[in-house]
Image (cartoon, rainbow, N blue to C red; front, side, top):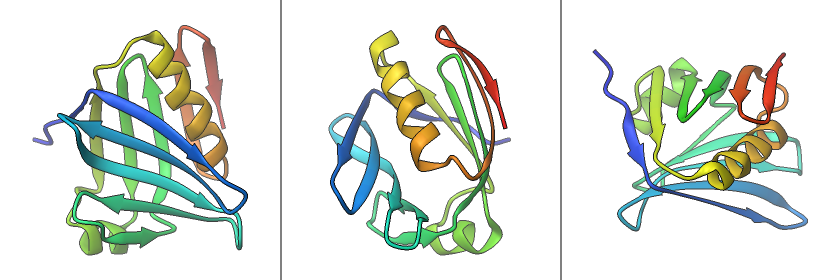
Length: 122
């Protein structure tokens, strides 16, 4: 059974070079989800700072539950499960922030989003 990682803070950092969603718990980074505009490469960065590229094949955000389908090589590199589940214990503004960031960063992956702002699928 895959237990969900708890996240109590979500922040976004955007520059001309990259767009990053920072997910943290207790003041410690749990996961960074980043898009590098040079080459349109998406990356996952684990808590130890290890980077996996082209890491997410699909994702869902339903309410406060985020699931990432992590590619086989990125899963092994990062020490993450292939079916990575995160419980976002943030307010509605935080969910809105996560939603917008993921739609930008992981727009090329298959996704299902169902939040108070509406339902989208690709």
